[in-house]
Length: 333
Image 1 (spheres, rainbow, N blue to C red):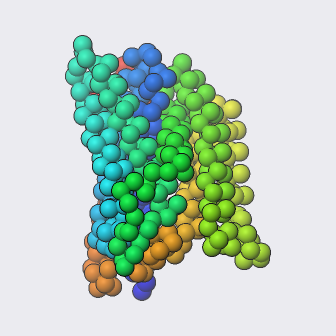
Image 2 (cartoon, rainbow, N blue to C red):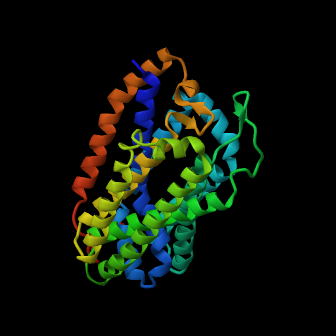
């Protein structure tokens, strides 16, 4: 069995699950500056209160899995991305504290709201920086990071950071559409349309950058007929993006969130196809980065047992707390 490939798929699933589930509550904080009414902010936070802690399970699984299964990749990535990783963790901690305290504080609630906004923006922007740094390439020499302290910082990584913020704001807006009604929902439809257009443009920009910057990526995507299958990806993105814009324009309820997840999934598949089989583009393949097969097999046993349990309790939680969030319901109740 190709344990390295199996684990690459499992970690990719964990990363996408994190983006899909934690993305909308990070997006909630990113949208806070456009929400002036306190009652609307309370409803937004109440819509994620039952599930937001569990969403970060997938971040732990993805990071821990990378360390356990692909130790070489972890050893290269961490020195290359120390600053954005630390910024992301501080942002997540900051917003977590603010999430709890904003319900308990009365006179200082506006400060905790600002902390929630800042933590969400910093965490999302840092994740985009890390994605951009990986896609633009990380210097490796003798199986170790060979770059400088600020190699992660470039115009492209800043663009990627902003793109992830926009994407999470889209997930947040479509989640609000699904979970609320009235004036707040009408605002969310407008946010969703604006961020959907910006995200599709950002995905196209990143795709053009990869094709124009790396010969092997250009060869993979532009060499005919070998690239015929890959061109299904931009075609699918056009179809799903059109479905997203149509569902928001027609003001449908749950479909915009599902379409938004589809846009993320197609982008995820496209970027993965661009760099495969490299785990550190374009230096270290996933087989070079993987640990011994016996270790991977041992860990796979645990994953086979635990992953269905995580999926089950996550699905059950979302099922229990399905439906709209009213003004009367609240985390503080």
